[in-house]
Amino acid sequence: MRKFGLIGYPLGHSFSKKYFAEKFYKEHITDCIYENYPLTDILQLESLIASETELCGLNVTIPYKSLVIRFIDIIEPEAKEIGAVNVLKIKRNSGNIKLFGYNSDVTGIRDSLIPYINNDVNQAIVLGTGGSSLAVCHVLKRFGLKVVNISRNKKPGVITYSDIDFKLISNTQIIVNTTPLGMFPDIESRPDLDYNLLNKNHILFDLVYNPEKTYFLKAGEDRGCVIIGGLKMLYSQAERAWDIWNENNS
Image (cartoon, rainbow, N blue to C red; front, top):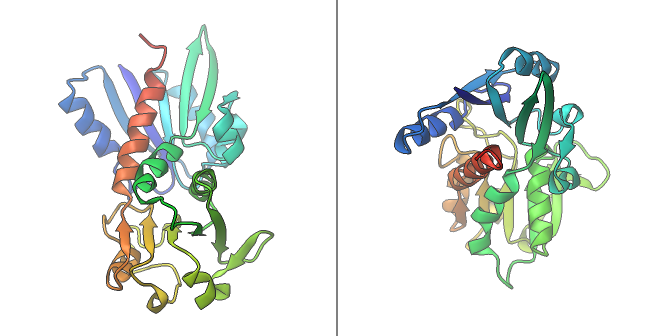
């Protein structure tokens, strides 16, 4: 039996186990299983991999996408450039274990945004500075967009929510939420924006997919914004992870 799974903490919000269980059922894949592995500390990763000898691959979610890199033997160039990994491939050979790191978030982000990228889109605001934010910024810059990073705390190259004003919003076409605000069960939370400044010229993209339409997206929709939920990204990055785990396995 080949095992796959998800590491992060907490994992109550995740759809990954359900997604892969349904995939295995629909595609008649009978030799694979997918489990959640909630790790309260990234240092638990080594013992997990050592004890679960059939484990072939892992997805990585909040808060470990950057912290996991220290354990990786070989990292793909794009994931290294981004500074975040959300897919681990585990290779075992005569007791030796090697970890390979990838970023499938970029696939999901590209697939979600590409229908909306045109000559009228030139600037984006990215809310949050975690591992998912790094992938979002990477994709947006590859599209040729100027990216403004927002965080609760001011740091080099990053402004705070209190710095967001009418001029910034009016010059921005895409706003991406990479924070967990609005994620189940805290569905009433949302990023601290002045939503009255939004209009039909704005595109709101939320990486949160549970619920499918977050408070952030609803507030934008009420003001005429185009909204993009996180499910398409989830599906795209999950399929990319599956491809990674099965490359060179035939």
